[in-house]
Length: 234
Image (spheres, rainbow, N blue to C red):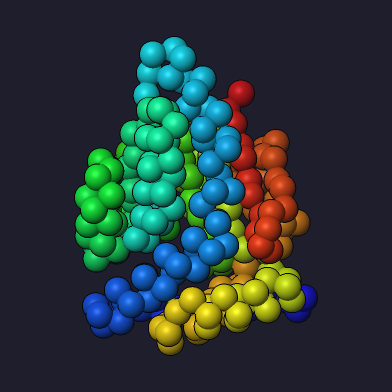
């Protein structure tokens, strides 16, 4: 796969039309559900939650750059079915995305807290046992990706969990196919391919984590064309 190329995604444009933004968010929900991206983080979250619950405490999970919150909401529904106690906080720079996330959570009868924060410009104004992030780092250049990971570490009392795209020809083909089958949004069609071309390979992500202070972070490849990171405090 060729060298990383990062350009601005249409979804990141603060001037994007609200209706078009909603259409794109809905398309991303379907795309993420198809790719099962949020389930890549669930096993370790669930394991930690059961350990914490056994000691009579509720696990606190903070999802940064949450977008419409489809990942944590799906995990919250599963936690409820399995009798696992987790408090969820959703964080994003976009007030509109947080509004959509709150509405989706309410429709699912899930209680969440929300925090507006620009992860790349300010410290996260909340703390949690586990800070998670899905499909955000490819929006960053190397310097801001390090900042994002370091701020996740600052806010995490137990662990940091991250998943993102792995730049590859397979990933590009899957993004093209999935975005067109699952959404009619031009934003989703454009951003899906731009995202893969901007993604870090697992080797590049490993170096980023080391630079951000996440020494000893565990990395795994996952389908479809993803990698996941898990870092725990000593």
